[in-house]
Image (cartoon, rainbow, N blue to C red):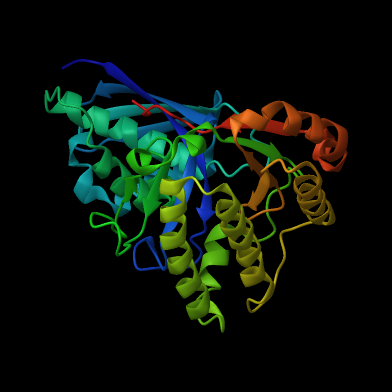
Length: 342
């Protein structure tokens, strides 16, 4: 075996039922369900060469430039989980990674970047072991979760569930499971227009935000609500009830930010324009009967979700009413992914 290369593309995802709070080694305190996106993705290429050493070496480039901070994150991940990566011994790795969306767009990229990395590593394992079978996507989800919790959900198309849930027998806190086969066709057409309210780095990282759920006075109530909403959403995804989907999605988004506002110390990531967009979306839905709704990640940007049948109406609404509240009039149009990453 001489030099060889592997590559993988993996998307970001947006949770409808939110996971907020974790324990142990990247284990969720409640289950979550997410849409897998298609256009906001990370492409990763790893060039591999044999060396005479017993260990591996690594160099990381992000969009052609060295990124010491991210290289350190990858190195820590590989060291912390070395029991899974013994096949890397004796290899020099040059990792090149890039995003399809602007790095300054305010979109969290860890789910896409870490799942793309893991898919590449598992392809290296296949080459080293002369194994021509497909990558085990459950294993990919498990290892992605160890790198970045939400990355567990990015390896499956359409939608996925991460977290043990009574009505889904094979669900687990250790990995996500695909929901593609139980999702009503209408949800497979969904768009996610991401309204970039701010492109600044968050004042409080997700890692810190998760830790503030420890001892939070409303934590147990929140986890119970998330578990209930998970079961509700699973039923909604089967029967295609868009109205109840909207109710769950918007409630979950606002609860996430309520947890931040009532943490100790409290903090807020929504901005005035976030709230303005939310009000306009609700007014638009009421007046037009177009079933568009919002969700939020742990930041100020608004994800506008809607079926493809209403694409033209929503795009016009965005252009005429919402872009003025976005940073540099920036909106990224994405759509649910309907194919696997491999």
